[in-house]
Image (tube, rainbow, N blue to C red):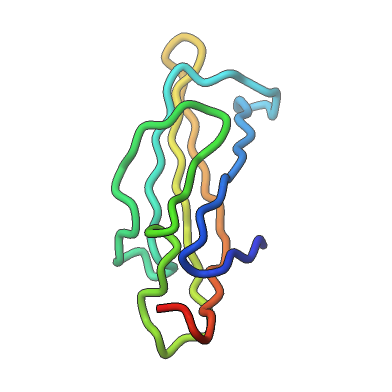
Length: 101
């Protein structure tokens, strides 16, 4: 699992596959970012141009300063082909740095 320092922007590459695991090129894609509990929305549903998701420094802020790290979940949904759809999750860790607030 990738580890990102808090308040650091990053790029998350995505791989898109069909139901058989073959690579596909999406016609549209969206993502959202939540904390690991699924309750705190870090980034609302956002359209993006595949294959990369640009994650801003604001999205990688620490929500609970008492934690040494926080897990984020990126949920991706995409369409391809003739009305076919796919979805997936990408997890990563945001590291709480001592002197960054």
